[in-house]
Each structure stands twice: as structure tokens, then as C-alpha cells.
Image (cartoon, rainbow, N blue to C red; front, side, top):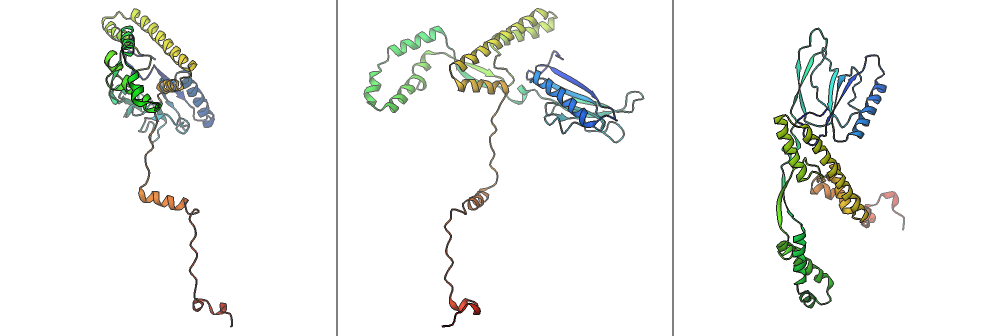
Length: 307
């Protein structure tokens, strides 16, 4: 399904309807369901996947560990047989309703409470360089008029300080790049894909206006064509980085596509707990202290030897 309004982090929505009869083999039914869900997730990794139906006694909660079950009320007598799963958290709130007609199962109203990613994470404002042929020519003129001997005479044969000084001159201290290449301020939204360009954003705005007026078919085809083109350009960009052995750029692109975020480890315990660990693991490195010499008067009577 592809409704008109769908949060950009989801490409489309897939609904899986399940019915497991009472005499069915619960383990076999869960295996079939898990196989179908895994296949759908492999084919459409960014989809909103919804699973609903009458599961009877074969609840798949232990198999669908990445899904959230939203039915929190009884659906038949005092049992919850009808379940609803989604592969995103904090998406729905369930409310019980009376049965429909003479049905023996209650209706469940799932009220959406999901907040799109663009509302949960504010836009990031960045300043980027606007490179063009005119900016490159101005930068070349700046390099040609620079007296590079001044740097080499000041640092002599100290190659490390010379490199730092030239790098600071070119990039950081409002010389060369800062003075010749113009900058512009852009806003990066958390739900934007890496291949979303200003041209695609303009087409998206035109699509919204066309939806209101009713003439949207031509713009939909143009938008699909432009998205395919930009995806192909992004793919070629990553292939060029891989051919140039730019592993850092390739890894950064893969993390952007997959949405990978490094989890910062949280400290556990306090200083006393850390000291106890140090004492425990370093106990073998400590030199044992010899026991003090005991006086013969303190030894047992049977250990005293006759003179």
C-alpha cells in the first residue's frame, strides 16, 4: 500500500493477515509466518510491516522479536487471541469496542500515535562550500600568488610543523578556501535519504500542489524518473570511492544508507566498584607478604622439640 501521506522513513506499507486454526501445529505455523515475514523484510527493508489476525494459541511474540504487539485488551471472553504487530515502536494505542453483529470476537480500535522521524529529531543546520568553476579558478589564483618560500624559511627542515602551518593557511584561518569559495547554509532533515537533491525536493513540492489541483500523474512519473536517476548517481559515486580505495567514504555511505548509529557505552557502577575489580584481577600480580615469625611460646605444646 502507498497512501498519499506516509512518513518519509517508510517506502510503503505491507499488511499481513494471519489466521491459525485451533487444531493447527503452533510451531509449524510460527515457522511459516516467520519465513514469510523474513522474505518481505529482505525484499523491502524500509517498509512499514503490519501483521494482524487470529492467532489462537500460537502467539509468535517469541519469534518476532523486532516487532511490537499493540493489542492490550481481551478480544474474546478473558483471552487475547487477536493480535496486531508492527515493526516500529510507539505507533498505536488499542481501545476495545463491542463485537460486530453476532461475532464472538471484540473489535479493537487501533489509534495511531506515531510521530514521524522529522518531528522527533529536529533539522540540522550546516554550512557547506558551494564549489563551482569560478571558485576553483579563484582558489588557483590564490595559490599562485602565495609566497610559499616564507613557510619553508620559517620552519626549515621541520616537515611536521611546515605541514601544519600550510594546512592551517589553506583551510582554517580565513585564507584561501575561506576567502575564495562561497558558503551556503542548508538544513538536513533526519528523514531525508542521501540521494535526495534540491531538484527532487522541488518536484515533491510540485507534487503536493498538483495533488490539490487534481493533475498529478505527469509529476508522479517525473518524480519516479528523477529518484531513479539520483539513486543511480549515488550508486556510481560509491563505486568510484571504492575504486579509489576511499574506504572511509564508502563506510560512511553504507552507515548512512543502513541507518547505523554507534551506541555510546554507558558507565556501569562507581569508583568503589572499579577499585574492587582492580583488586580482584590484580591479585595474582601482588607479591605475597611472608607471615611473621611466630614465637616458640605461641606454638602448640606438641610442636615444641626437647632441647
